[in-house]
Length: 399
Image (tube, rainbow, N blue to C red; front, side, top):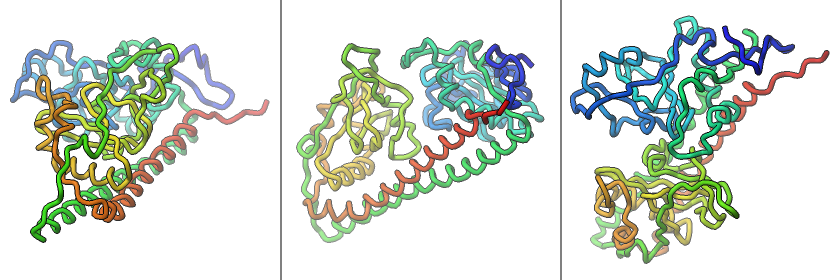
């Protein structure tokens, strides 16, 4: 086991630190296919960095490689419990290969960490994954990248990442805490999703009930009832600017919930550039337009739109109206494969826009459901902070 200079040896508390590739229980660390060739519609799925978000693999637009290419890269043919690590862009983001990913492959932009059977049995896979998510590990991985959108982490740097390991009895206790936190976080994510689905269902019934009354909601162009703002490219440090959360279109498209409460990137811009929490973020991909709500101040990325409404009732109605009409909104996208929102076309898009009393009546049900979803997500952040503190705060040893 190769110890890092940071550790040198066991410290007084019994912790040691060693390089990731030398952690007991890690079988190997490798990147994926360097020359994948052309997309093969009937080939083997290949996971790219862009396909990993919020701890899961998004399967909507997977690349596929020829089976011969896959056979030439058997080392990264995936097994259940392999840990996938993003090497390009959102450096350090992870996902775990499940049964559905067995015998898939990964691109050069993704590293595979495989564990031995003993490593899996002792929770080394869980320890490494959670350590990669700590601020300390992220800082070490991003050295020299300056938060750039397309920063690349050399595999050697990932292999040499210092990983602290506590004594066995303490690691068992922390792993138990992680297990409890993961279970609660999974439940919270389901709660957030179900709360949104209930609001969607109520919107559908609310709208259909009005149609059954043989009446029609008034219609209005999007720009007449909300402020439509174009996105901006990610920028480096600027004189007089601040580091602000920057949301890419892919983060909107791959968000596991309708509330975007974190971003991987930052941009440097004046404070007034950031959209306030409650702003709707709209991003397209072929055949679909996705709308989410910013739960934090955020600068929208280029290719997407931000929608500011005048009240909570307007926000609730606009959100669910846009979600219900996702396929129709594709016509407001532009560019290659319709991957950018046209501000002009969207501004002219006509929405069902009932009287204020009706919008407020809808919001009285929908808003508390969204508040419950946000509360569940915020609890997940608290649980993550709890685990990070357990993994990083070593006990003080009296001498």
